[in-house]
Amino acid sequence: MNKRRNGFLIMARLIVLIKPLIHIMLIAVLFGIAGYLCAIFIPILGVYALLNASGLNIFCNIKTLFTLLIAFALLRGILRYIEQASNHFIAFKLLAVIRDKVFTALRRLCPAKLEGRDKGNLISLITSDIELLEVFYAHTISPILIAFFVSLIMVIFISCVSPVLGCIAAGAYIFTGVVIPLVNSRLVSSYGFSYRNKAGELNSLFLDSLRGLQELIQYQKTDLKKNEIANETDEITKLHGKLKLKEIFSINITDITVYSFNIIMIFTSAYFYLNNIISFSDFIITSTALLSSYGPVLALSSLSNNLAQTLASGERVLSLLEEEPVTKDKTDGKDTDFNSVSCQNVTFSYDKVKILDNVSIDIPPNKITGIYGKSGCGKSTLLKLIMRFWDKDKGSIILSGTEIKEINTTSLRKNESYCTQETYLFNDTIGNNIKIASENATDEDMINASKLASLHDFVSELPLGYDTPIGELGGRLSGGEKQRIGIARAFLSKAPLMLLDEPTSNLDSLNEAIILRSLKNADDKTVVLISHKRSTLAIADKIYSMDSERKS
Image 1: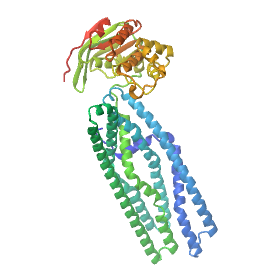
Image 2: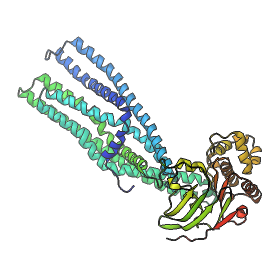
Image 3: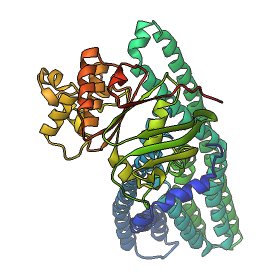
Image 4: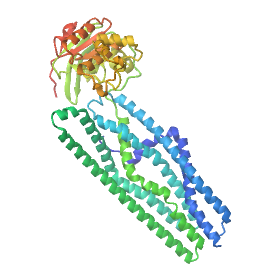
C-alpha cells in the first residue's frame, strides 16, 4: 500500500455499501433524532414546570407538563432501542457482506498474489479489521446525521428566543462535534494505521511461533521467539498508549470547550435579561436547552480515537478489495475439452529474475510426459503457467488448439488437476479431504482413487477409517500419508490432464512403485510428471530435461 487515502474517501467508499439497507438507516436516524429530542426536552419541560409553579411562565398547566415528562421518558428508552437495533442490524448485515467480498477477493488474487503473503496479517484483516468496521456502521454514520439534525433543531429553538444565543449554541455544537473530532482524528490517524498494521504483524508472529513450536523447543530457541513477541508487544503497547493519551487530551479539550460555551451562554443570556432584551424564563430556558443538548455532539467527539483505528481497518480492507490479480479469470472466452497441450518458446520472469527462457514442450494425449531437472530450473513454474496461475511473458501455451488465455478459467480448471509435493489438508476427515477433488464422488469412487494412490490399506487399518479426523494442517499424518491424499485427489478428479509436481518425493520405494504403476495404467489420463530423480521418470513415454539457470 504505497499511498494512503483520505479518511473522508474511506468513509465514502464504506458508505456506498449501505445502499441496499438505506431504508433501515433512515429508520435509525429518525428514531435517533426523536429519542435525543425527548431526552433534551425532559429537563426543559422540568424547568417550564418549575416556572409555571412559580407563576413566572404560563406554557401549559402542570398536569400536562408532567404527562409530557413521563411520555418523553418512556419514549426515550423505546426510541433509543429501535435506533440501536437498526444500526446493529445494518452493521452485522454489512460485515457479512464485506466478509463475502473479502473471500471473493482472496479467491480472485489466489494463488499468484497470495504466494508468500503474510498469512497472519491476512487473518488479522479478515477477523479483527472487519470486526472494527462495526464501529463505523453502528456508531458513526447515523450518529453524525442525528447530531446534525438535533443540533439544527436546537439552534432554531434557541434562536426563536434570541438569534445571538442561537449563534452561541451553533458555535458550541460545531466546535464540540466537528472541529475537535477532526483535529483529533488528524492527530491520531497515523497512530491508528500503525496500530492496525502492528496488530497484524503480531498475529503473524504468534501464528508462525505456534506452527514452529516443535522446532523452537528442539533447537532451544523459545527464549529468542519470546523476546521477539515481547518486543512486538511493547511496540503495540506504546502505540496503544499514544492513542489513549490522545483520547484523554481530546476528552479534556472537549470538556473545556463545553464548559466555556456554557459560561458564554449563561453570561450572555444573563446580560440580555438584565438589559430587558429577554425575559427571566427565556434566560433559564435557553441556558437549560444548551446544557441538556450536548449528547449527540459529545457522541461524535468521543468517536475520533476509535474512528482512527476503524478507518485504518477500512483502508486495509478496501485496499485488498481493490487489489488487481496477476491473472484475471476469463469468463467471455471459449469452453473446450482436453486433447493435448503444447508449450512453444515460453519465457517467464518473476521479480525481474528469468525463470524460463524459450522452453518448448509437447504433451500428447493419454501419454506420460516426464520433466527432469534440478531444483530451481523452472519445472514447477511451467506447471503453474499451464494452470494459468501466472501468464507467460512470451511464447504460447496451447490447450486443445486454443491459447489458454482465451479459454474460460472454469473450463481450464475442469480439464486440469494439479498435485504438488506439499499437500494442503483441511481440518476435517480423510474422506472429506479426498472428496474435495470431486463434488459428486461416491464412497466407491473415493476408495478406488485411494487404492490407486496406495492409501486405502493404511486408511482401512484406522479405527474410524475414512472418517478419521486429521487435525489442523494434517498434523496427525506423516508427510508421505499427506502426499498420498493429494495423489488420491488427483486420481479422483475428473480432469483428463494430471500435472504432478514431485508427487512421490515423500514416499518409500514400495508406495512409489504402486503409484507409478497406477499412473502407467491410467489410460484415460494425460500425465505430466515432474521429478529430479531419473528412476521416477522411468514410466514416462517421453522425458524433457530442463537444466537452465535463472538469469537476473
